[in-house]
Amino acid sequence: MTIASTARTQSMSAAELEDLDRRHLIHPHQRSAQNERHVMVRGEGCHVWDAHGTRYLDMTGAANWLAQVGHGRPELAEAAARQTSELEYFTSFDVYSNDKSILLAARIADLAPEGLDRVFFTNGGSESVDTAIKAARLFHSRRGEPDRTWIISRRFGYHGVTYGAGSASGFDHLQFGAGPFLPNFEKVTPPLPYHRELYGGEDPTDFLLRELEETLTRIGPERVAAMIGEPVMGGAGVVPPPDDYWPRVRDLLSRHGILLIADEVVTAFGRTGAWFDSARRGMAPDMIVMAKGLTSGYAPLGAVLMRTDIGDGITEDQGFAHGFTYFGHATSCAIALANLDLIEKEGLVDRARQIGGWLREGLASAAELPHVGEIRVAGAMVGIELVVSRDTREPLFAGAGAATAELRDVHQVITRDYGNTIVLAPPLVLDRDDAARATRAITEVLARLDGDGGLRPR
Image (cartoon, rainbow, N blue to C red; front, side, top):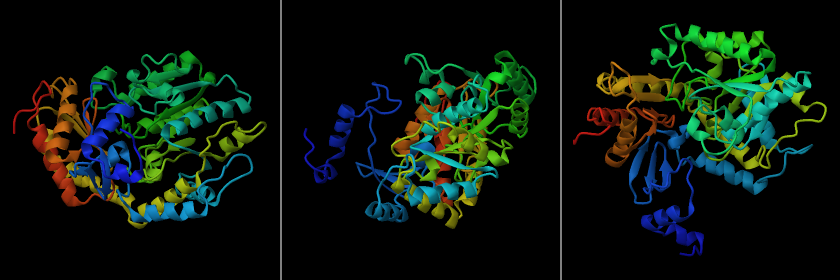
């Protein structure tokens, strides 16, 4: 089949699009055995339509933790059109810049925790993490400590899949078979309070702080550049830490001159009910990495926010020899500015907390089901952890995949499975009726789950 024009692609059948997909696209996290395709062609608010015309309720933020302002917003399309008609792109390398990237950097700094006011733009989350790692190492080197190259991260922490960000990510399958990743990365135990067996009967935070201190002693704290962590662990299944975890980690790192990088790619811009979640968790980060909600997914854009002295430190002498062609892309930045306006004008940061309340209420009966171990809510993020038995807390991995497929195919509700956890992260324009529809469907499906991860007939 030859693709002759855009008009022809718009008239293609769903089957033709699915066939082209199988023949030409390599999907992230794709397995060759996965022959099924769901081709989305339109979105509005919290709903999307596939090429067959089926309408779905998006409870995942476009299946990737974003879409804060919902799908199909004309305000963002208009912002993109205006900007491309004026200046679509010009480099920001060296002495050049554009007005929208300047205005966006100032806007981010205004929203950020106090003391963080320098911005470096990227194309997304993985690049933001790579940039922060490089900046941390360079900052110490410029201060006369070139041996500070080690990065501490956590098992089950997700920071991206490039060689830098992938070296920090705490999932072995992301690194298996791809050759050596970056050296000088060490991973420690994460705070997973539901799994107290990880801590040998000790208070989780006491255990984790002792382990972290022992890790620093073993490596040599003078050789550690930074620790990176998510305020709330997303890829681990929406896991908020104990209240005293981040303040105590921050204090320990500060005593050794180690930087703390908050990975807010998922949590920033209202997702948990705050512009930046790290501040209220007591992280007091030296850098924040972000992407996703910065544009609500309407254009690729990420950023690293850092302290003034770090920004000054990495640009002195030979400068920061780092950057991307699309740094501060004028059109992406214009979309981001319009997106932040919508989040603010429509009160979507506060709305996230309200959505969390609706979802917690709607899932209350599901929390008592035999294969639901724990339901965790952090603003408009939910993790439903499935277990073989509530007594043993053994993970029920097959159950999450079976449940998400049933929810999509039978109830037309899109959720995601992360290991043995079903996660929700809906657009922040979700209304109460759709929240109720989603939680009813989830409860109905999980009530039919068996101990092998299968579903009993309806």
